[in-house]
Image 1 (cartoon, rainbow, N blue to C red):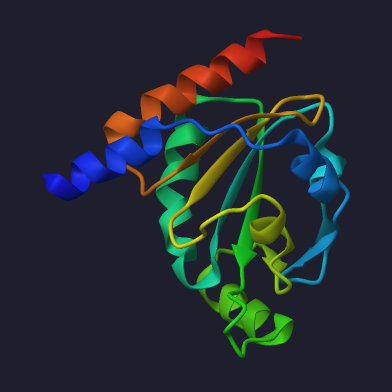
Image 2: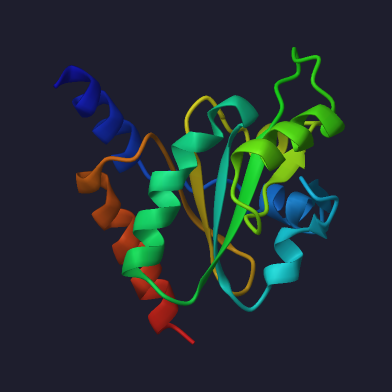
Length: 165
């Protein structure tokens, strides 16, 4: 019960970060586990949910994405695996693990330099959900593990964005 309350409080707190930080990472090209590059700028014109978490906890973003996909059509997802600074992992070792554990076709961008986490001041120990509008503006950020009752504020925010052309 107490952990649910703490998680709910974390998710309920909507923190909108500085737009300058989003602008700084917008064009940042990261490679996924297959070596393909992607960036936030590539998704301009679409509502985007960025799911950022430490590489060791990638499984924690799956429930968020699955439930959001079930409820909402028309959003793009960017998944960012943050590699902690104290890790000895390399891009190649992280990419190999992700290829073993993540279904084919699901792209996970690998941030070995922690550029997203550093620039946006993200604590990636738990999933971070960043909602970006069609113009590349950061609308809201949420942090926490998935819990069904915490889904509604995120869904509501996304549906309102999708209604706006």
